[in-house]
Image 1: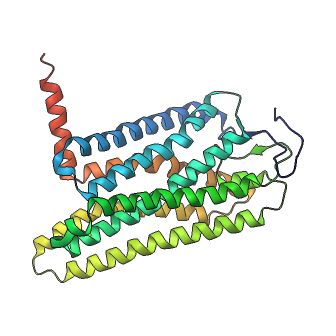
Image 2 (image 1 turned 60 degrees about the horizontal axis):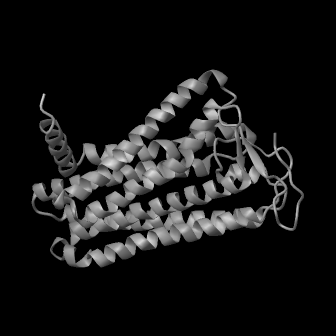
Length: 319
């Protein structure tokens, strides 16, 4: 049951929303719960593992792994914003979420996604400096400068999220409060608003286009310079080494931006809500699991540290 309160000024007339989730497929509730629980568990173990490995290996105390540890932290954060509520509505009949809870969930998912978008761009710039100016790398990517870049990405993500969330809070919400989604995704929130949302949509569109364009521009520019430098390298060994350090990052960027762009391209009409939910599940649940797999499976230093960690644990427990 949706609880309704009287509208006062710009305050919402709905105090709770109902999340439809995947209830149109009742026979899939249990399999989906097990699937998403498994993915979430792998996400937490994988990303926490990356962070621990980077911290315990002095060899990994470099800017690249500093940014990678923050990428893993962001993956844990935005997966933990969406997934627990998704798991809950798959097993309980009460699929409600409070107005404040919904806006809080949206704020954090928006902040972490935008921050990760720019964190991947920062990592591309780091690869550009490493390949194009290897002798000046430690000077150009000083600890202070790296901390500044990371702080900037979190600040920008928080600022953008606050602007969009504030525009949503100002809207009125009435009627059934039925949200055809498993979480408080932007288009799902807008769909249950009964006031003019044109300003909010313009703000969201402007921030989304600017953030996506800037992060992609930084990434593409960095890799264009990398390709140009690498092609000019006389030795094939240098060519292979340069590309091997960038392959994992390119894979992560392609998956992340590919799914985000897919979500932008899906029409937000009733006929396409299922696709919107699937696309959201891909970037909110799948991507955080894939990143540690991508970086650990293709990274010799990470694999070697993990192997030594496992061996030390095994030897510390004699049979």
